[in-house]
Each structure stands twice: as C-alpha cells, then as structure tokens.
Image 1 (cartoon, rainbow, N blue to C red):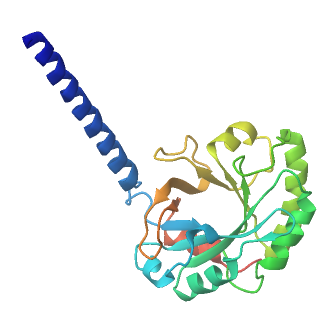
Image 2 (image 1 turned 60 degrees about the horizontal axis):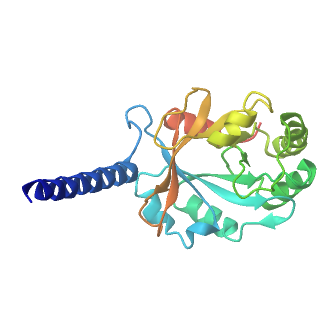
Image 3 (image 1 turned 180 degrees about the vertical axis):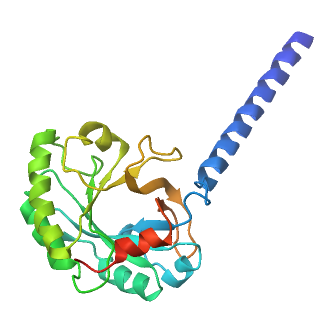
Length: 238
C-alpha cells in the first residue's frame, strides 16, 4: 500500500510539474519581446482579420509603424485597407502596404492590382511582397519560376513607388527560396528566435502578440535601426 501511495504521489507531482512547465512556456511565449536597447522601434502588421482597430490606442502602446494588407493575387482587395491606412496615418504611425503574392496568378496582374489600390501621393514605407506557403495555391513553383513572376511584379511596383520593395519570407519560404529569388531587403518571420541572418529590415517575432486597441492576436515586429532608419524608409520616392 505504501508503495502504491508513493506512486500516486509521484504521478501527481509529475502532472503538477508538467502543468507548471506548460504555464511558464505559455507566459514566456505571450510576453516575449526582443531587447529594446537593440531594437527600439516596434511595429505591427494587420489585415481585416484584426477587425475594427482603435489606432490612437495602438499608437500610444509603443507602436511606431504599421504595415497593412492591401491586396492579394490579381483582383482581391483587403476590405479594411483604406480605413486602416487612413486611421493609422492620422494616429501618427509610419504606414506601409503589403501584397500577398499568389503562385497561381501572373506577377504582372498582381502588380496592377497593388498599384491600383495603394496611394502613390502620400508618404509610405517601402511596398512589401509577402511570399509564403500558408493560404497560398497548392502548387509550389521552382525558384526560377517564382523569380520570373516576382520580377514581373517588382519592376512596375518599384517604378510606381520609386523605392525598392521589401520581400517578406516565412521560415519555410526562406528555406525554399532565399538566395534564389530577387535580391531585395528582407522582412523575416522567426518566432521567438532572432533570425539566423542579419540582412533584414523587419523581424516578425510574434504572431500572437497583444496591443492595446486591437481585440485578439496581432503580429509584432521590430525594425533593424532606430527612428532615423524609419524616417529614411518613409522618405519620399526618388
């Protein structure tokens, strides 16, 4: 009987320890933030999935920039883009727009969609093209195929906005395509771990962050550089 009781107590203690480890892990995940001394400029990226956003509260919660989904593929426009862009700018944030690049539409068609939706006559952060597998077409183009369509997107977009675009890559997309597609400044997704390369402009470090003014989860990012770098990115087209 004593041996049985010891086993029961040992099992209960193990379960309690496992539960504590899980709780600590969740708390660390929720609260993770890169060193503010190294990366003082914080930002978010959003789409209609974030719902109605109180941008003045966002701006007051240590958020300096917002990159907002504008378009996807050859004809889709994010329904919240215009309002998010207008209200984020009014709240004092540096703003930019991104395009979700699909593998099943020509790059030239996607460029026309993005250019027709995003304003050219306002201060904007560099345009971003989002390359990822999640939510994309099931086909997986070779690096050569993707690069050809990506160049067909980038050339008119960069001509329209007068500055180099930034390429966003998830971990999976980076492993598949980095170094084999158009050489552009990078925005890397690396959750809770610093990217394993240093040639990035933005680092998306959290996909379930919390910011005042937004109900639910939001992607969190840092800029490599200080306010001077942010101002340079926002500078007028040339």
